[in-house]
Length: 87
Picture 1 (cartoon, rainbow, N blue to C red):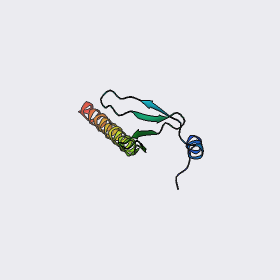
Picture 2 (picture 1 turned 90 degrees about the vertical axis):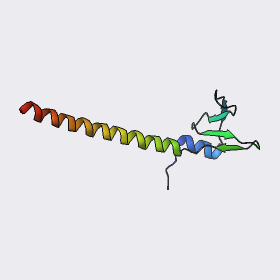
Picture 3 (picture 1 turned 30 degrees about the vertical axis):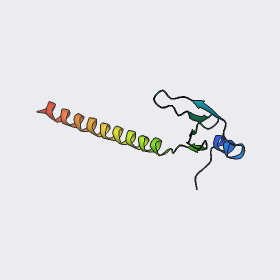
Picture 4 (picture 1 turned 180 degrees about the horizontal axis):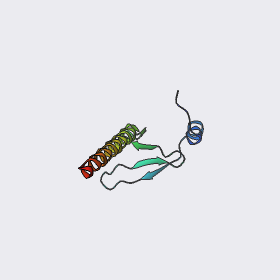
């Protein structure tokens, strides 16, 4: 079971407090909740549809993998430099 943050609890009880953000590239406005910062869009029928946060999760994992790879490469470079200095 996922834990609920206080901001999310407020929105689950009272509903979201959305405001519009107009994007330059698309004509469709994006709605953002003032309380919990969740994003939503308006579909063709006029219903509010929440945007999935899977892209955020995916990007966070990619960022972690990038930094792990970079740290490992820097560590290998340090080891290589210490061995070449001894020779």
